[in-house]
Image (cartoon, helix red, strand yellow):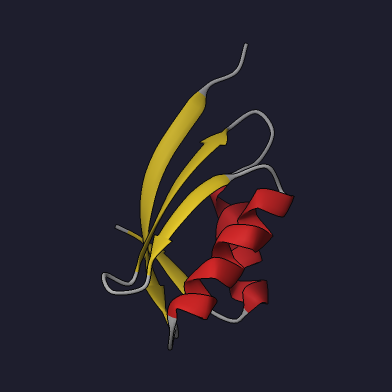
Length: 71
């Protein structure tokens, strides 16, 4: 049975709205619903904890070039 989790992450290192879009696209590739707000420097993620962990999500963001911290 799936368990959908919602979390907010503070993002460091974004310089523009394209940065936010890159994060969203990379998270969608690993089946994470994401909404990144450049102005607030925050990403809201929604994911199935049976398919991916929060640590893996943070790693994907790091590999995209940014730092993510759980709020």
